Image 1 (cartoon, rainbow, N blue to C red):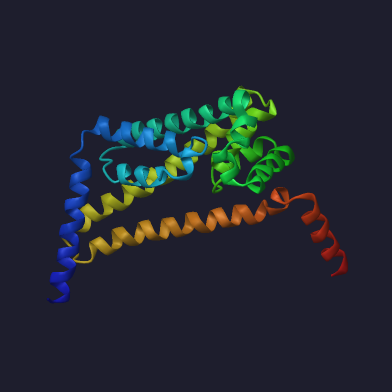
Image 2: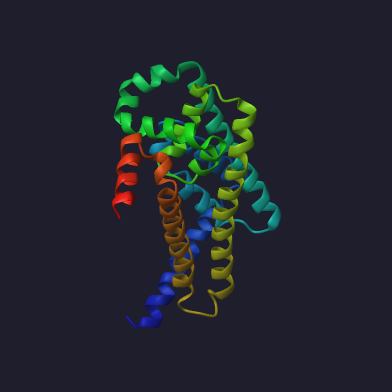
Length: 235
């Protein structure tokens, strides 16, 4: 098989996959994405549901700015519902959940990190936790346990959800749109599509690591902070 034929085959497979997604009823597609993100942001469940993957898949089927706005709205609402669920669970059942088998499976270290982070950073912890693994599921529960007001919680988490949804949907829609424009002209258009998504996911991974590194001091326990301070003095 020649390189041209192989590349054409990749385009055909990718076109078929994109068409399968686009042929799903838009309302159903949007609802599924919203539910997936709701589960992804819900306490404990969010650790196993790949909501970001569902948003990317749904985003590839966006055919107009209006569709993108509607999908983004559904994703944001789903995220807020999931985080609100975690908040109210924390308000009424937080200690029980923390002491449960599932809570213990998460590890006391992660619970303590969420507690410290919220105590030290306040509302900014709520905003940034949307972009941090594990914490994005634990922080809403921790906020509910802390007595933090629900209105202030929404004020901090809503902008984070909007930014997150906007980034994922716009990149997925741009990658799919670029591919459809180039598929009939370039044999390697499929690789461009995959490349855009890979670069984006790498940037997301790096961005999360940079945020985590920048916030490391606020996530660390008191002993670790003292050790770092002693090390700085010795240096």
